[in-house]
Image 1 (cartoon, rainbow, N blue to C red):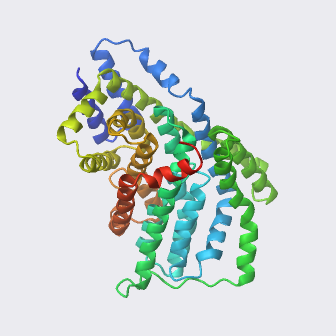
Image 2: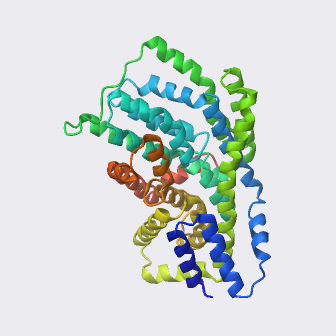
Image 3: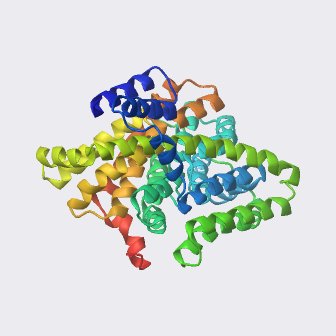
Length: 429
């Protein structure tokens, strides 16, 4: 069996609705059997791929997010955002975006953002007079911010499979993540000013200054959480994994101190986090086998030759790669996509003189957009379940936001400074 047949089997399994982990695993199994290779490669590669110390951070950040949701810390972030931007026209829409930026500074998982923030703000926005399709659309679109702003779990995976410093990746995603949030807020501002779309954006509730002050004071301890994660890594005091441990301990202390988190809640939180981690890890390990076979078949070298034969124009080549990644993201989850494609595309782009951190930021940014695009965008389906609105209606309402996200993606792709400025300023190279 050649590599093309393996790809065909993988695509067929995906089309019939088989989960991505099984599609990757079974297509790899078929290749190994038909080529007489030892099946012991499967457990070897699956276990070795998860032995990296860097992966300790991944389940801990997921756990931290679950503790925040159960312990009322996410709600406190919402209240802080309402105190700061809630009074403006379109206030709750701004709150939606700002909270995603704050929540992303702790959790780093777009799907968790959709569930945690969507379950609170979609009903609140609808009740305040926002069109329901817009409320859902801005929630889904803003969920991608958290997957770019550190600590992004996808950056952890990219760093693990390529050897690029996770600390550099975290800092590289800071400006692009903020830009994405600002871009979406500009879109909300435009709708608020446009007479054509006046029914989209009601005037925000003006909270009494005492209430605002109360929300800000209550939210300060929670706001410190992202600083612990980012500051510890930047200062060289802790690694990404160690900062995740500190974040979990701090979140538990805050939750218990506020009395919204009970000790009896912890087993349920651990179990829910374990299920999320398990689903991510099995996809990651299965995609490692697939990536190993591609490497053995010299697919990275083939891709390098094909792309360089098409054009040696850097601008055009980056556009081709972005279109390809956007296509891949529409049918493949970002975790296996990064695991498989990063080792393939990294040699192509480094050969052109590009920085691995910049490559990782725009690649992850691109593939994360697949989480909000049909037919397999998981954030879309989660939001559909929360709002009881069809994926088709949500996707239609999101068309302008797709444009906003794509514009920011192009800026990040063609302006390396956006990804490299902060790592350079911090002396991270």
